Image 1 (spheres, rainbow, N blue to C red):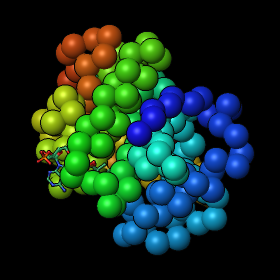
Image 2 (cartoon, rainbow, N blue to C red):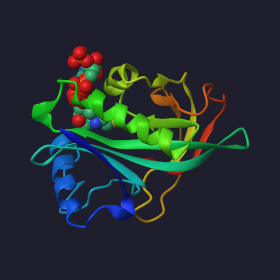
Image 3 (cartoon, rainbow, N blue to C red):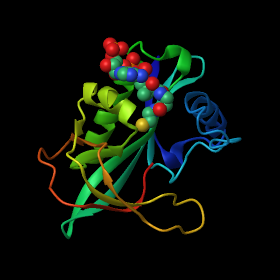
Image 4 (spheres, protein in one colour):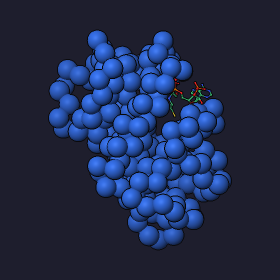
Length: 181
Ligand SMILES: CC(C)(COP(=O)(O)OP(=O)(O)OC[C@H]1O[C@@H](n2cnc3c(N)ncnc32)[C@H](O)[C@@H]1OP(=O)(O)O)[C@@H](O)C(=O)NCCC(=O)NCCS
């Protein structure tokens, strides 16, 4: 598999259909989510990491954002749309993908990587070097691509961070001021 890291503005428009097809295959529990050529969910990424053979087999989206914690801005790279083609799963491709994501986060100069995930995916991200935070309040938008909706305000037990330029993650409520990738 060949790995590439592509900024959103450099992604040829015809590539979206292939990525959407991969995301539909990897996220069958979100029917209609990646319809047609829509290759993003709640917000469009800034950069994509793609693993390709004869077609797109693995993908992750990354978006830089300042999250606010205790009144201070903290530069993160949000990771999401993490997907490996179902027939290739459990063979190490996901870890390879996350290694390339980590390299991309380094090149973007962020303090940390940040993501929220379903509880069943925590072991995967931990294997990839991400650290699960203790339960804490998070405030985020459910979807920045649709009509404005109330901010979600909840206690998250599955927020993970990857140390990039900084080691320690600050304590306190995480105000995302936007949606997850
Ligand atoms: C999550 C995902 C990207 C993992 O990719 P993958 O290629 O299967 O991952 P790897 O083979 O590199 O797995 C590495 C390690 O992560 C852990 N892991 C991966 N999938 C796991 C699962 N379903 N349950 C428990 N542990 C898992 C294991 O420790 C695994 O090592 P092992 O196979 O030696 O036990 C893939 O399952 C996927 O695309 N899922 C559907 C889309 C999705 O839900 N993405 C996550 C959104 S938050």
